[in-house]
Image (tube, rainbow, N blue to C red; front, side, top):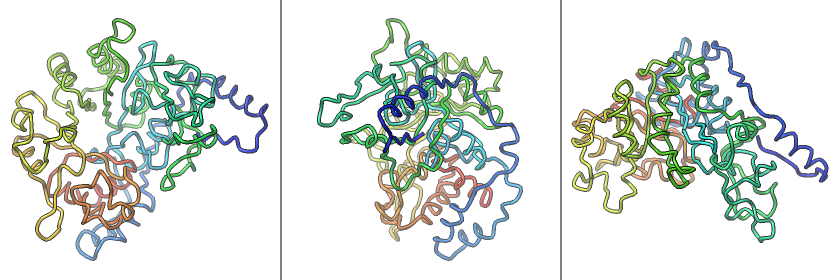
Length: 418
């Protein structure tokens, strides 16, 4: 929810704040199971297809019969559908399922009473919820400093600052915050222009266990990502990383979820090793999120810079490798998108590939797709080129799935081309 206090009196500010705290979402209102009986991709994918150059891809996509669409595991809801809905909320997850996502992601972190919840970062409550507009702002690791010129410059609010009950009292909003803002209104009202607050008036937060319940009702696969701890571990003296990793998968067992519906993710090698050695039911679908691009010497075009090698990753027991989009593609001498040496080596090592994250960037024409498309920037000119990239990933690279901030696009492509 985007709280708008402009023109309200001090008394009205206090009333709204009080209501925000008193309204605790203690009961999860799960949409009925028929929420995905009628999948709809809307107009955006067709708008993108209109921008493709004439040819087979454009013709096939625009001629595609969209009736009878089914969910596709190729289409993965990245944080739900955060292009237009507050991420990791009931509303975003439901929207993703209604757009045909066959798998949906809950990023997993913990509260101060050691309960697991869905947030992209342990310390993003100040940008993804209304916490700063509630008395819980006082609990933040670094609360606003209203005596400073820029009260929100250093603000940091973490899930581990509050309990599950307190977490559930918050409302999700579009992920944004203006660190140079001088007022709370200015800080909160900072959603990127290419996103929207149209669906941000309510965002129902969930525990990890509640996300499992919701995803089961929606009939989708589940891909929880155990997030990096941003507080010292062991937390509160004895809560360790291995305990979190075990607790996360135990919640699927507690809900009687078939492990074949679960793809646990992590960037952390210790989580990978722990799950493969201790969780045999889930081990075959553990997803290694590859962030070796952070290493100065790493080059996705040069196998000599990759440590570990693709063969070593496979020998460790990993079967799913998930790099960012740009690591899987490059440009040939004609400027066309083709599989990268990284993609070819992963396939040769019998690693299944998942790419992230489509439609995470702003409008393509502004920055040629930005970070997520950096290896093919010259080929990214308009929104149609996103579909060209998607076609290369599916047909030439052979990815098993693609995370998207608007899974209607990946669902549309999967239905029409796969």
